[in-house]
Image 1 (tube, one colour):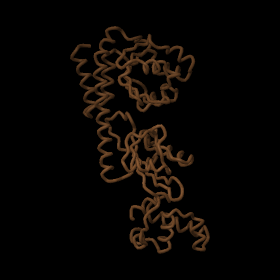
Image 2 (cartoon, one colour):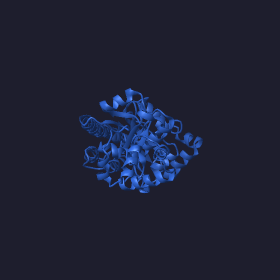
Image 3 (cartoon, helix red, strand yellow):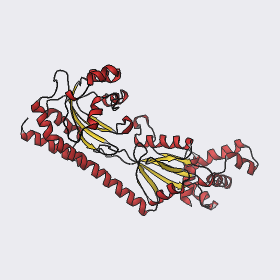
Image 4 (tube, helix red, strand yellow):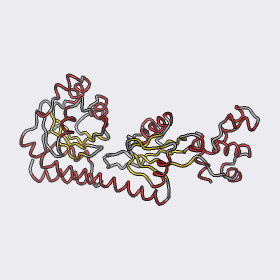
Length: 367
């Protein structure tokens, strides 16, 4: 391929980074320029995580099957292992790996290679940082064989430009994070910006105070964790759902949790941050907003007007917001637990929420 054609591929990567083009289109150009079957841009995190994996020229199910075959695990895939240790922009062809042996030892991975016909690869680590390695590769079929010297020279010319494009994308995403954090700071909101692994990328001053208080939430290894085991399981699940919501299954990505006990209880709202159509999703980001569950006293007339509660419903709603259990409310009012449950059902319906944690948050907003 001539210099003009290579320059066009380079421009396509630059356009993708700025949202004026597609990463898939750019990777298709890379594959074509090197006479290869596929182009790939992959992000590899800790614990065999694969935050993103863009393939061209393979079946749509290939990336999911790659994950299912543990393709991101350095113990399984020598391409990941060797590439992860190589300096940035090192160019490695199939002779650097033990792919055939990998496939024999780990049959699911070997089946993936055979099924998608990518027994040869040429790759380069583009970026190494503490939490992520970004790799570029072209995959080749058995008929195409290992990459030729001429094709490798074309690949070597393009790889630095692809790295520059990825860095541009990462910079833009980071800038957006900082703008968000600044807005939350100005509004004096306790908020964390997290990645899919619950790693805290940014937090406001109010959020730092929540962590310093050592109550329901804290940081462990740079990750947002709840102090109690049951709370932490719920929090981690909420973060995972927000980071990768299954919209095809109609999954609601937002979660509202009540963590902790007594006066230390916190209302934690977990939301996915909007994703761009052109981004790499290098670090899927989640917004976690924290408020005290100990709400200020809300005048009963406010609840009556806001939700058309009856006086009994308003009183029970305030009891729930204060952290009282259904049993305690029933005992104080000298009614059956079933009666309290019926009142709560009506309260949730009128408030337009489905859970008591959401009701607490709604009432707090009125205080």
